[in-house]
Image (tube, rainbow, N blue to C red; front, side, top):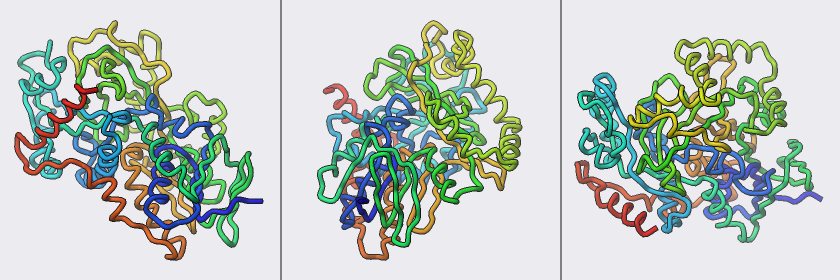
Length: 467
């Protein structure tokens, strides 16, 4: 006999886990289940080795427009507030300085314009422009060995949250796992979903479930499931595998480089690992792969299910990959995985951040990196930047590439409102309590000046020293 729920969430990564936390804590929905195919929560892309560990605010991500930064900022502050509230011992996150670095007159002009003219300085009160001497105070290795005549500028902020999204996902689930009416099923793979007059029947390898509403938060597989149910057929995926190079103890925090606005991928950056500040990670690279999960050969067929071998998909790929900016970028990234040749080819990106680095100082990280599904709109024959969501009658499909982890609680808030609406208004969402547990704990600057956030940064440094 089927287990019956008002809501079933499919997928136990950061997206599904944050939704479970939000619904179980801040609504009066009586029965909710989370189903995860792996034996552990957050075992795939949310694991800390499989992503950049970055909490994206939009302040140093120079491929974000001001409008996108405004959207992302609230989502990041929700998660940062949650971490400030529940993780005082810094087991799930660290907080360090972060900056975006401009090198040379042209980049400096662009960064100044972004800060002063485009409104980013007003949007982010803790973000401050700093020159060579102040950069050196925060990150000595960024300045050492650099041409003294080369103009430098950075936008720096103390809000450099580095996050273990896997541990954060487990925190969300553990917070509600023992609540009455909450069930968490791991090692349980969904085989089929059928719409019924009362909602959905969900068949798994461990039994069946029935749900009035369903949210599919299964990463790349969300689109696969949607298309099996007849939705999202105008979409395809461009799976991108990210990799990293490691070095010993070069940076104190996160240092981004300027990003081309046309590219949907993260700028190459260097940062200290969330759990081991003596390890500096550089990346990510971005290699196209015909699979929905890194190192999982069975997901190659899943990719072709989504690709569909349709003419529109082939034409979309051809149009996207013929771009004069994207094509050279894709080809260069293929080289970075080659033994020895790869790290020598990647070295100039590292040296832009840390000039004195040599090829012998970096090694390609083994076992690091996941797959991010870039969304392809086959009607427009173009990439859809950012996240994708398909909303149908009583069901939501979340396909969440970057910055999906950063905005997981904002997505959960939106989906919770939608779920309450699906349930015909029989339930309520206490958004005030949700914000009190999350964004209300985010530390804010009282003024916009050189000292804004200084106290916060000093407290962060003291906490790290105590660790």
